[in-house]
Length: 219
Image (cartoon, rainbow, N blue to C red; front, side, top):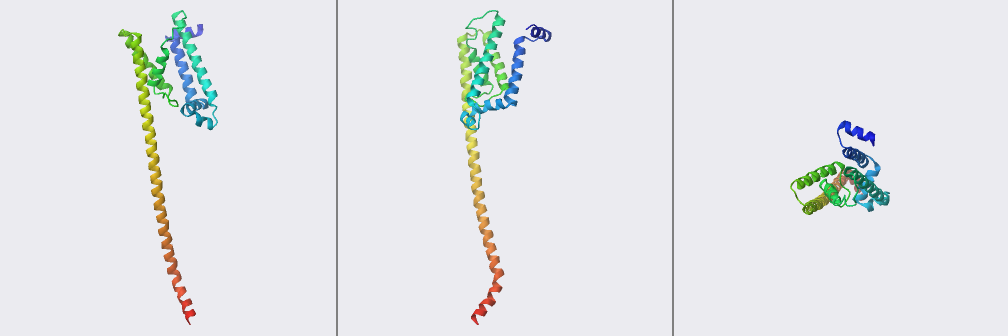
């Protein structure tokens, strides 16, 4: 603790900010450059398909819940050290901030999509909104309503975006099917035409040989 405090004082950065930067770097690497990170995305996107390809989705979910609990406990320790006291109601309402920040950062509420950079941007936006509402003297009740409205809007945008993506994939699939049908049709016509031309050439080449044989039979 003394070493961290000395380093924090030397670079003029608070210890919670240092822990935030360290956690961000670790989990950015974990999600984007490790096999387990890809398994987390696969489990969130489609747990049944991930299970079919060999991912133990139960262990992945338990690990995610464990990491979430550890980070929540770390945040509680940082808050207690900041306030020099401990109360069970200190974190009341912070879960709404976390959900709103991740939703603003592009994380899909249905799972499988999201990034650390987007979440960091969402945290900054929620912090600015909360600070502005506090400076304006807005009570906690209306602040929660504003954050809830942000979550609702983010979920609606996510649903619309997913439907648009699914419809685009369906249209591309239908176009590919139609082009395959047309190609198959023209390939069949081309083969029939080539076969017909080959038969004509064969008849023309065997015609002069057939004529003497017919004359011999007639004589």
